[in-house]
Structure formats: structure tokens, C-alpha cells
Amino acid sequence: MSEICVERIHEDMISDLPNDLLIHILSLLPPQDALNTMVLSKRWRFLWTTVPKLVIDFNFDYTTSLIYKCKTLVHLTLSNNVLVDVPSRACLPSLKSLNLNCVAYKDQESPVKLLSSCPNLRDLSVTRKSGYDYVTRSLVIDSPALRYLKIYDPTGDYRSIQNTPRLGVALLYIVTNTRAGFHPNDTFLKSFSSVRFLDLILNQVACISDINFNRLTQLKLSLFHSQSWLEPLMIFLHNSPVLKVLMINTCLSDDSLWRSWRKPISVPVCLLSHLEIFEWKSYVGIGAEKQFLEYILANSKCLKTVGISSRYMSDDVESMYRVSASSQLLFSTQWRWRSMEN
Image 1 (cartoon, rainbow, N blue to C red):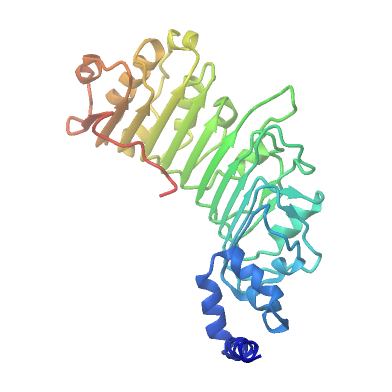
Image 2: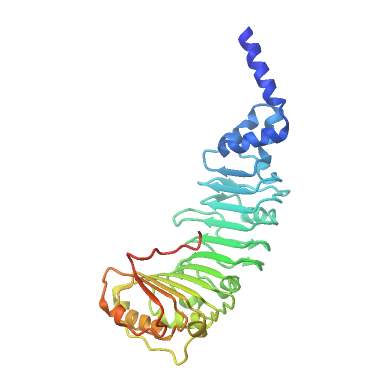
């Protein structure tokens, strides 16, 4: 009997602590454990909604709409097929970071309601994988405060991103698949025309060649199975007048490497007056690739650093003419492929 009394006293001692202290305790717990405290008593039922960070995956047992009414929540991660069922009165006024990793939406309106409930959202990451039977393929983003956007979605509809005037960093994995009807159009891509940092993984570079990126200073471009990519890339460079950093990763088919390249009549402004860092990963050094590298080195007057990563190291690169005599040439053992997420 005395043991029971002791347990009750301890329970009362914790429950009687002020909210600020209890919230601090919850913030020190793993997010999943903090959520589980809601079943302890009435006092604890809503207390977890005041923690600043939640990570919810498929093991989460409480599919409660209260998640979408946490007024103090700052960071939220939903993953592993969690069902996103957003109530009509959802309100996440403090949420700044949202990560949607392979989630399932109840209907087409769920992602719309979720994002509209986050007026101060700054960072958004969306990951979906091919092979999933998603109810919602269309991605609708209307987030005026958004500054960082990461999309990894080889299966989605790229037509519904709008109203992102403060967007500065965008990381996009875009697959053009005409058979399945997925093709990024101008409306989608122009949503990123004001970004300063752009990280693109593409199988077609032509889809971005006609858009002006007047504020873009850093471009990281990864190409795979892309044909005739140099001409569209040169147009892209012409449309990016203040570009300072250009990073290229080429994973191309063998036949595309041997093609010749016709140099443009005029040199892009960014090469003449802004480009300082040029990096190339998976450089092979034959045909059009070699010609393009020679062109970059011969016309980039402000170039400071050149990084080349290749399985076929050759003295040809060192012997190429560089208009910027002070530029430093580094090979794969001397530099690290940089990330825009750092």
C-alpha cells in the first residue's frame, strides 16, 4: 500500500510542475516519446503540442488532427507513408521547416491545406519515389515566405508552384518522361527564375534554356542520359549574367561524348565578368567535353578556381590555355564536390 502512495506522490510532483518546465522536459525527449505523453493524463493531453520540433513516421499510432494545430511548432517531419489528413482549421503559425518524406495524402486538397496553414514557412523538402501509388500527384506550393525548396520527385506533376517571391535556394530533381505525361513546363520552371542558388538534377537541360536567371550566382547541374546538352547549357549561361559558381556533374551515354560542339558566336557575360569557380565531376575529356572545358578556361576572365574530377587524368587539362593566369587548377584529390545544402 505504501508503494502505491509513493508512486502517486511522484506523479503529482511532476504534474504540478509549471508548464514552461514541462515543455522544456518534453523538448529533451525524442519526438516520438514526447507524443506518447498525451495518454498520461488530461494535463498532458495537449502539452506535447507546444514542443518546437516533431518527427513522425509510420510507427506513430496517434493519427490526430492536433498535430496541425500546434501554434508553437517550428520544425515538422512527416515520413514513411504517414497519412496526411489536414483538417479545415489547420493552423501552424510558427512552423518554419517542413519535411514531407514519402508521405501519403488523403486527397488532393490535403497538401494545399497543409501549406496554406503555414504562413511563415521558410524551408520545404518534398521527397517522393517512383513506384508509389500516390493519390496526389500534383504538387501545389503557394508559400510567400519560402526561402529554401528541395524537391525530389521523379513521378510528380510540375505545374503548380507559384507565389514564392523570397525563394533563394532551390534543389530540384526533375525527370522529363513524356510517356507518363510528366514534363516540367515554363510555368513551373519560371517559379525559380529569381533564386540565387540552384541545384538541378536533369535528364534534359533543354527545358531550362529559355528562362532568365538574373539573380543566379551559383548553379550545380547534374545531367544523366542527356543528349545534346551543351547548346542548351550555353543559352542558360547567356541567361545568367551574374553567375559566379558553375558546377557540372555529367553521367552521359558514351555516344554523346564523341560529338563535336559548335562554339557560340558571343561569349556569355557571366564568363567575361563574374564566373570565379568552375567544377566538373565525371569529366571524361574527349570530344565535345574537352572543347567545352577549353572554352570555359579561355573565356572566364575572373576565374579563381577550377576543379576537375575524372577517372582519366590527363596532362591535356594542365596544358589548356587559361585567360585568367592566376586561376588555380585542382584535381579530384585536391578538392571536394561542394553541396548547396551546407
